[in-house]
Length: 233
Ligand code: 6GU
Image (cartoon, rainbow, N blue to C red):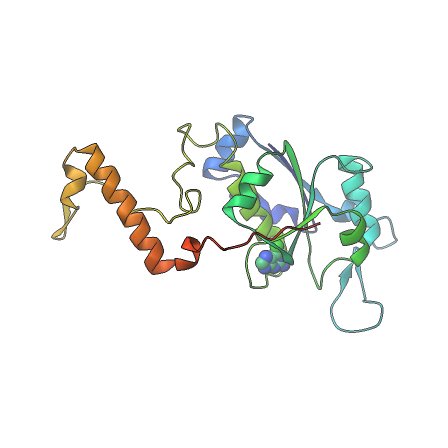
């Protein structure tokens, strides 16, 4: 899986990409993340990447020229593969969307900043828009990291075991059952007997029951099959 990230602050993604599982995945050649600074494609006198909004109002808007030049320069004209704008106005990011994106060999992630990007970028360059939740971030960089992380761990080989992601919360449609490790007793709190029983059928049954109970208590909305998926563009 290859990711091309377009941002005014691409270095802000580095520490996370250089840690733990994503670092190892990149070292093994399973993922490749290329970071592109949009400012490098700004050709005006002060390498300006934003400007005041037509019609007035507060905040700055990211100019279209450097964004088109950056994305088309890296991905061709028209761009090869999805070009995803990270924005609170996008479709909600879910495990299902992560699985859908993981089917592509290559994703471009465009991080907005300030009040947003010129509408012509959304209308004529971007093929998808994603939000990671109903709150507003200062920019799309953290959201891009969230997408890279969730999609990478669905990329074959990135997680240790072949079926590493199969039982995740949300992958099954349910929250995960409780996990325990040694010691069997810690500060008088004991691990449930069933998990020490060695009876794999009983353990599987208990886990399924716990997953259902937990989902009912915490996220009853996940059990509601009438839920609809948002589609976009
Ligand atoms: Cl993708 N970007 C920004 N700036 N804020 C967000 C978001 C994205 N998703 C939720 N809030």
